[in-house]
Length: 214
Image (tube, rainbow, N blue to C red):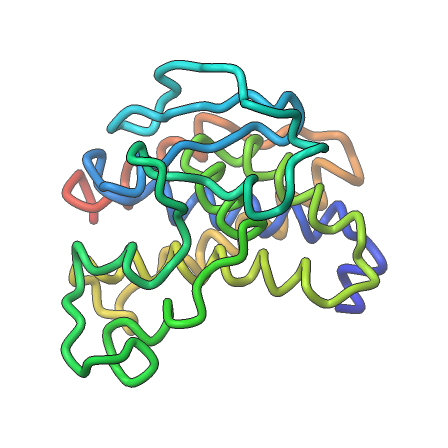
């Protein structure tokens, strides 16, 4: 919280970068890549294709700034909101009857706020898209909730990656990414040095599940 209040832009960038790094290592056909998001800056709805690239755009029914928070939640193509524990049951079956008691789904039991869900879905399109969403959250850095929303988005991304069978004790990628983005965030915001996009893409490809190193 102290860091968020002191330098909210840096905190937003760090969370955006790490969340994007983790989320974009999901398989290219992962179902979460089909969730529809709205761009925070323009209010344009964007449906990513199965590889995570932008497929098509349609105008929103109302301006983002005018829409209630729930209406800003990312949606599945069917129109259902994204951000409940049921969004993980395609990979992990509910065994114990309640997600709060189920070891496989308890990380998702509390759900994602529309704000956190927007950051997570945007992160699949890259760190810059996630940063736009994250910066909207930490504008109120004196409040605790924005930081919780960013942390929840990262937690969901890590859960999804590990739901493909990567043991948490062996999954060093989130920690490597956290270290990388601490450096990149300071370099960009303090010195104006842009992140090395080739390096970012190389690392994501290497750690993508089902491809190369992962």
